[in-house]
Image (cartoon, rainbow, N blue to C red; front, side, top):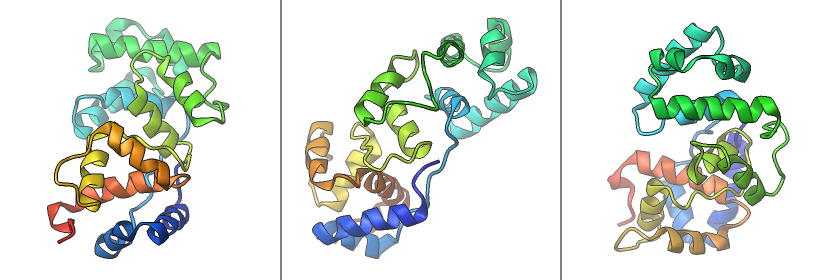
Length: 209
């Protein structure tokens, strides 16, 4: 599971002590709610299904796939499913390939989701070896499903936008700059990432004046 409400608050409070802009942002909109996902195959598969489609569409495909297979969270069933079955559930040809590749990696033991490397970068490297899992998907999985406290998805557009808004940049900072700035926020970058999404959802009126 991801970072709890208590862990989020503790991490953000620690950052607020060294970054007045973060303290001001917390005062404006409050603390974010936890973003919790179950560890394992189902969460990664749902991440793949959600790529480039709406949440509603991804959920609809998941429900149909689950009904057709009996249990879409079982990688053995997905690995055994025909391409036709996966396509009938609403997966594109590409996503059907990704789903089967992920299932094969998990069932073969090549991707041990119950024992990923303790080092964050090594764990990300394990995940991105799977077709359909990029760095962002790997980072979000480690943050939401494993609750790793120092994950920092600097390539996320909303993270970049909100770092710019919170810290008063005139333009959206680049991924390189956002990654560089965040070195000072270790080991609580995961809490701040979740806060940036919370800040993004609160709208432009939450920007400092």
